[in-house]
Image 1 (cartoon, rainbow, N blue to C red):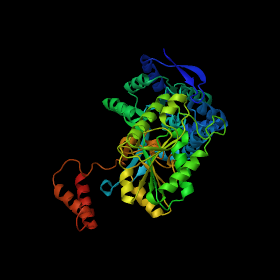
Image 2 (cartoon, rainbow, N blue to C red):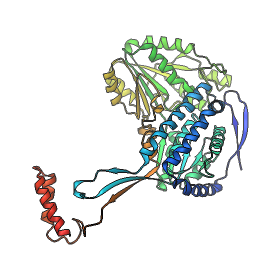
Image 3 (cartoon, one colour):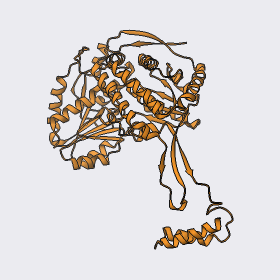
Image 4 (tube, rainbow, N blue to C red):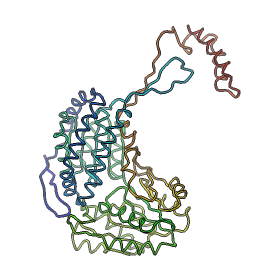
Amino acid sequence: MHALKAMNPATGEEGEIIQTIEPYQVEEVMEEAWDAFEGWSSKSIQERVSTLRTLRIYISDHADEIAQSVSWSTGKPKIEALTNEVLVLLDWIHHTERTAVKELKTRKVKTPITLLGKKSYIAYEPRGVVLVISPWNYPFYLAMVPVLSALIAGNAVIIKPSEVTPAIGQLMERIFRAVGFPKGLVQVVQGDGAIGAALVAASPNYVFFTGSVATGKKIQVEAAKRLIPTTLELGGKDPMIVFEDAHLERTVRGAVWGSLANSGQVCMSIERIYVERPIYDKFIARLKRELESLKQNNREDTDLGSMTFAKQIDIVRGQIDDALEQGAVIEFGERPVEWKMKKSMHLRPIVLTHVRHSMRVMQEETFGPVLCIMPFDTEDEVIELANSTTYGLNASVWTNNLERGRRVATALQSGAVCINDVNVSIANPNLPFGGVKDSGIGRSHGSLGLQMFCHEKSIIEDPGRNKGELQWYPYVGKYPLFLRLIQGLYGRNRNYVQFIRAFLSLSKKSR
C-alpha cells in the first residue's frame, strides 16, 4: 500500500501521511457502496434534505477550521478559501434544501389529445453508485457540490480526491462521519491516476470528473466502453472583452481579481484580455498600478497566495518562454528564469503584451498568474478573437452599453458570460454551470445539477376501463378514420369537428 504526504505548498510544511488503496481493493469499495445505496435510496427526499441541513450547520459551525485546512493544502489566501469554497458551498446547500423536493419529485406532464383519458408523469430515480473525481485547485467546493447533488438524488458516492491535496479528502471524510451519514454511503478513496482508472473500470453508474482536458478525454473513452454516463468539467481559456465606454476602475480591478484569484489556478480565470484600442494604453497603465498594490507576503493580509502544484509552474514557464521567443513583451513582472533561481511556489503576476494567437499562451490553458493583453478595433473582430480557441467555459464583456453587452454575450461560444463582472456565474445555484467545445460535457448546478444523477422514468396511466385502444387490433376499417383524424387535427385547414367524429368512430371500433 502506498502513502501520500500532505504538504503546504506555500511554506513547504509537511502534514499527515495518508494511506491509499490498491486497485484490487476497488471491488470491495464498490460493494460497500451498493450495500449503503439500498437503504439510502429508499429514504424520502425530505429525509435526505434533513441530513443535508445538518451538514450545512456543521460546516457553518466549523467554517474557520475548514477554511484553514483548505488554505493550508492549496496555498491560497485564507479569505479565498472561506469565500470561494466554504461560503459558496453553504449558499448552494441552503438553496438545494429549498428546491430539492420540487426538482426531484414525480411530476405530472401534459398528455396529447390523441391519448385522451390518460395521465403522464416523469419520475426521478437514483442511478446507483456515483464516482466523483475532484481537482486540486478548489478541492473542497468542487468535490462537495457533485457529491451532495448525487446524495440528495438518492445515490451512494465514491470520492477520488486529487493526490495533490489529499488532506482535503481526509477533511471531507471526517465531516461526513461527524454528521452521521450511513456507513459506506460516502467513501473517500485516496490514490493517484491508477486508482481513478480502476474506479472507472469498476463500472459505477455515473462519473463526474473535474480536471484537465487530457484526463477528461481518457475518462470519457473508458466510460464509453462501459456505457457509463459522464459529466466532464474541464479547462478554460476565458476571454475578457473591454470596450472603450467601460467603467475603467471597475474593469481593471475586475481584470486583476479575475486573473489572479487562486494565483490564476481557476478554470474560469481570465486568461486573455482584449481592450478596445482607444483605451488600450490607459488600461495597461491603470492595471500596472493595481498590480503594484497587491500584497504577497504569506501572512493573513496577503492578496496573492502560492501555486498549489509544482508541475504547473513548468507549464506556465513553458508558455511564457514560447511567447517571448515569438515577440511578446513583459509589461509587468519577472522573467521565468528568475522563478527558477528563487525556487519558490510564489509567482508574481506577469503581464504580457504584443501577444498573437499563434502563441501557446493564447491557445492553451495557462492556469497561472499571467495576464495577456491584446488591442482590438471592432466588435466583430473581438468576437472572432474571443471564439478562436478550442475552449468555451466562461467569458466576460465590459461596457456601459448593456444592449451591446448582451449582443456580444450571445455571440460568444461559451457556457457562461458575465457582463461587467467576472467569475460569478458559478456562485448562483440557479444557473447551470459547464462549458462548450473542449471545456466539457454536461452541466452542474441548477435543476439539471440534481436531475442528472437520476434516471428519468416515463410513466403513463390509463384508468383501464375500456376494452381496447384506437391503434390496437383489429385494423379493419380504421385506416380512413385515422386519415380523417390526422387531417382534422394537423392539416392545412384543421377541423376539430372532423377530428372528434373520426375519434369517436375509431373508439366504437375499438370497444
